[in-house]
Length: 190
Image (cartoon, rainbow, N blue to C red; front, side, top):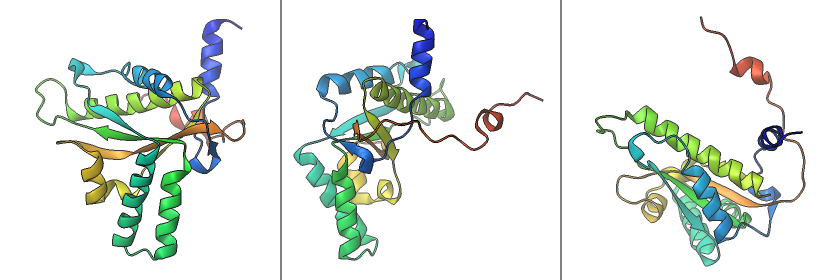
């Protein structure tokens, strides 16, 4: 098998791995930098850089868990629900916040092209994690709209999209097949 086929096979073997299926070790600083380098290769018209990543590891995970608990309580969760939120925040060895900064008034690059760049960056990041031997999954939900969580993670003009949970997969397996797969995702025009 030639190198191109090996690279394609590696990409085709990637699937999302949720935090409860991840263990230590998580990626180190050099590996996280490689993941961000891959993200920077996403198409980016006019070099806007409409995305940013924030690493959450070590003691910062405890602070994030506290924010998740407070958000759960503000949403009406009881102690058991708040404890589940804390446990979820602490589950992955490394968590990376994904932030977008879309310039709606850019004269050359419409917002939809900037969002496409953000999606490409996220895909490249997750693909690089996989190629380095880590599992990961993008997580979001109601917490991305919580004012205290947004204030903790976002800079001016940024939107919190969610978090990437990263770590070593507890088991290697093939990902689930998508019902309909290629036939649903690819068609001829008109």
